[in-house]
Image (cartoon, rainbow, N blue to C red; front, side):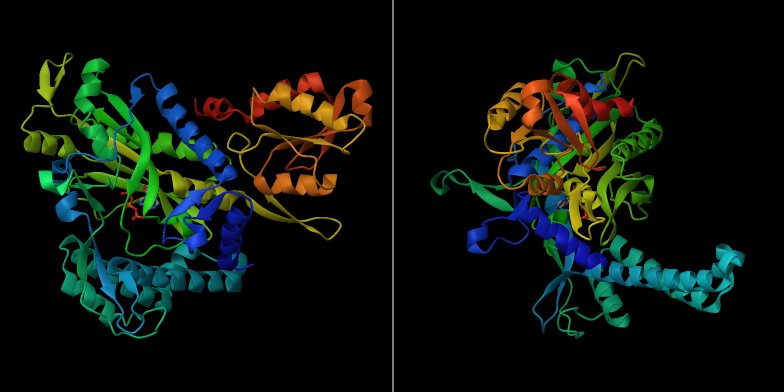
Length: 513
Ligand code: ATP
């Protein structure tokens, strides 16, 4: 099946099974805004819990905060967002569609990469086991030609982005003959800067309203609270502050479902370190974060780092953790070495000293910061994409199953009476009432047992138990495993012991140690 079709199926599945709905659905939706349904909210909360606990529980030098979305507007001046949080946009006059100029060019660069990979794959097929890929890449005239064109385009693009030369970005689009995917024409407008922050007014106009912004990242709430937390928590550098919260960006091109939203959620951790030690911490956090992802068990081949060549003005190292989505490797998390830029800026703009006195070195300094920043919604999407599976069964039917890590699954156990009579529903309810205190357990009596299993497979429930007539005598149930579909007979009194450990967030956290 084409990857595009797989993605469409995942989006449809998210809606059909109560994971994600378009916002304001009965009014035909609101672009790039989504709501989480009854199953989505559970999965999302589990992801957040896994992240929060891995930060705050497992590190005695990391604490959390929850700062407000509204902040003093000068914060966004100090952070550079008022002047520099811009994307270069371009419109196609025929389709009236708006694009990010940088994304159009990056897609063009990716096309060269794809062409090169295709040439290599063709040659690998031709030469079979005698194929030497490195040699082929270095000697094939076609590959060399494509590589040179790609590198030249990349160099020109990087220079234009670094200088934010809008005319040059437009010229690249014209020279590369990039067409609008909708109209197919090259009738482009000028490239303009577009600020991504939403703004609103605080206070009544009579009092003189103040323009405030909806935060475009949660990080600044951490920076401006850094000294409050350091002092009241008596934290010693190195230490970290973690936060989960909403962020808002007026994205120009909202595409790919919950990958790029206008209202989304971030999980950010700022780690404050002694100047000069930041590179060491940067590589430590790269390793720690990659492990956090890989413990979910989707396979190491689903992840890669993408180191940034173009660094933000404040950063001295940056990398993305990319995940293999159906539409290619995409950023899920950013890890940045932000120097002391943010804290120094807030010191300058607020006029208050926020220096740290280091009792070990007897020096005062502005700490350097390593940031790990991950989007909850993108993480959610990556988990959904990796978990969505269509299996061909022996009887010719297709089974749709979400192979979610058990600890993230919205429902852990479904208790199903075989029939709706003979005291089986009562017995099943007894089991639910006992186990619901330990993990998310539901009761379902509607439809045939086969249909009920399928329904649980589709939302990723790792375990189902069936209560049958024998249960009333032997106090045993049939426990069915989602992935293997194998069934075993177990005592009701053993259920908690068998299931609780495997479905708890703790089971993931232990693998991180
Ligand atoms: P992109 O290049 O995709 O726009 P970014 O580099 O601007 O992302 P950061 O500012 O580093 O992203 O934000 C950190 C994380 O927040 C990202 O890795 C991503 O997971 C998430 N994120 C950023 N923008 C959005 C968005 N519009 N919708 C959903 N998640 C987002």
